[in-house]
Length: 113
Image (cartoon, rainbow, N blue to C red):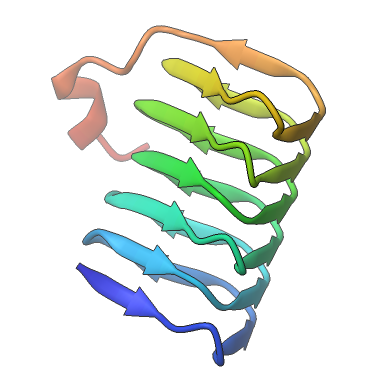
């Protein structure tokens, strides 16, 4: 697992393909074909588009995932969430709309349009 530590701040887009544990701050969009874990101290100001995400920190922007989005009790999400599976724990702050949809078929995931 890759790790973006708490003392790191990125201004601009972040793209990755493997699993990432993020504890820093990003002002920009996050794109990945892999899973993302947003730590309790992490802040993202931008859209998140990944395979799956666990949110423990703060996201100000829309989240779109192919598979599962878990919003933990320590999380704050200010934006819309679109996922195949969505869970939110008691104590989390979520201000936005959620849309649960069917996951993409394996053949659709590999097609580029």
